Image (cartoon, rainbow, N blue to C red; front, side, top):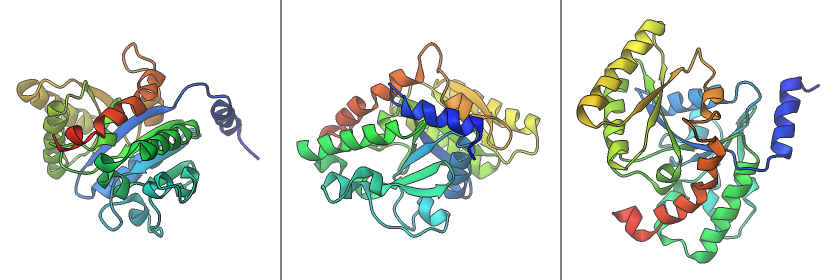
Length: 261
């Protein structure tokens, strides 16, 4: 039997009139793949449904390999008309679905009008099925992929370790160079709240001195309701405003000049 929260979430998706929120997730730590999976699972709490565009290649940090599941298919197959986009969705856990997209990212600058139309239609369908559409971001912090650049929100998940802090600083500099308006931060693996907030304070000090990118505290992966934060308005904007512009920005970010520049 469905709980009331599950039923409410299902009704929200059934009668949704706007796209779900879109967030790019950047994991910083000794095992960024495991940290990303932990974070995405946390985002499903409270009957939230999360669909993830996974930019990582099989065996190279992909969520399916991290979860020990078979890896097959790619979003690119749907763009080529071989199958429906929903057939690329792989259920990793209750409320968490992964869409492999490493090949799609590689081909982004080569997509013609037909493929772009199918991509936009497919992403619209994925957004309709989710409370949150996440991008499991890959690559060099200095050169974001089209999907990561198109996301209106960027969540940096930082392991409470030296490796996590150093990686976070590199991503912060890269996101600032890419023109990110702000960066939301969550901490994982801290001894206690004081340890977590101290790490955030050090990152905030770093950004203030070096890049000027505003940081927004979102709490701890293990202790706080991340899903509520990531689906709530950011500032005065409703999350649907950024979501509705995602596909438009993706089209611009996927142009050859944008991808290679």
